Each structure stands twice: as C-alpha cells, then as structure tokens.
Length: 230
Image (cartoon, rainbow, N blue to C red):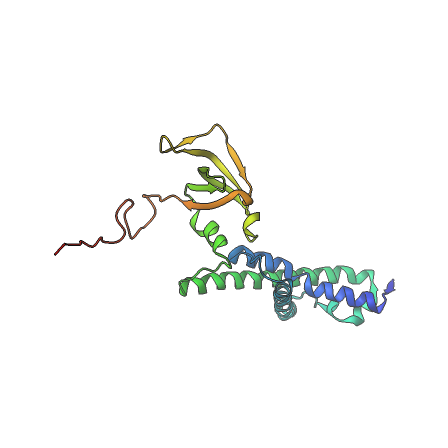
C-alpha cells in the first residue's frame, strides 16, 4: 500500500537523509583530529554534508557492483509514493550511505594525521587537545590550581574540545605537594575530580625510560657568560 506524503514533509525527509549519514563520519574524523570548540556550527554542518555527499557518491558507485539498492530516497518522486515494500530497500541503501560516509571520515582523519606528521605539525585543532592526546599518555602529571595547591597523579578522564573553564579532569591516585617537605605526599583518595575552572596549569612529568630529551633534567639551559673586571 502506497502512502502519499506532503511535499513539505518529503523535503524534510530528503534533507535528513542527505545530512544525517555524515554524523558517523564526523565522529570518526573528530577521533583522529579532535574537535575545535571555537568552530562555528556552519563549518561543522558543511563538513557533515561533505562526508555525507562523498559517502553517497561512493555508495552509488559500489551498489550496482554488489547488487545493492540505489539510494533513491534522495529524489522526491519515490518518497511521494512511499510503499511498505520500499522501506527495507530504503533502509539498506541508507545503511550503505552511512557506511560510505564513515569510510570517508576515516580516510579524512587518517589523511589529516599523515599530513600533520609529514609537515611536522599537530593534527589537532587546539594545543589542549594535542597535549591531552599526544603528551599525557603513560606519564604522571602535575596539576596546579588557582588556590596555589599542586597535585600529581595519572589523568583518568579529561574534557577536551571545550573552553578552558570547562576542561574538567579526574586525577587517579592523587598526591599533594608539601611545600615544607618539598615533596608530593600520596593521599588516601583513589580518584579526584578537578573542575576546569579551578585549574591553572598542567605539566607532564618526564619518564627517563621512554622520553627522549635534548636537555638533561636539572642542568643549566643556557651557558652563563663570565664577566671579568678590567
């Protein structure tokens, strides 16, 4: 039985079919390069549309080769006379469309990483995202708070791709710096939640076994000039 859909509803459905498949591709792309919290919505929507259209084109090329249904839902005529028999066909084509968009998101993310490596720059859109994803793993960190306290521990969870005051974190096995003893004292807590609004700075502690450094810890960075009196 065919159901006749209003032209306005058909337009909304087509728009959804065109844009929504780009969401998985965007998620996969963001996994590799992070998400810029300063980016406007139009730029992100354009990227979603790009992944969706490339996925649609890719699936449309592959579908005849594997005997899969074509994505006819992007045309108004099939949707205006929608029948129950078409639902499975539309769903199959839509799934292929989503897979195509996801594949292009993966290719774009990996490509951005490779280009960044060849160009000796970060693939991430912000210094904070690069710091969390590329510098922290496998290291102790020290966290300085706005009230002057300093903690050390392992980062378990950190909010990225957000404004500075929203970069909340969870510190595992925290220790607090004792200024009198000049050392970090381990606390009885297993985990500590630190709101981003209280964090002033974060530093990664050098691991001598794995990190390659140009300088040695504790040495004078610049040669001191000798001044001789005349």
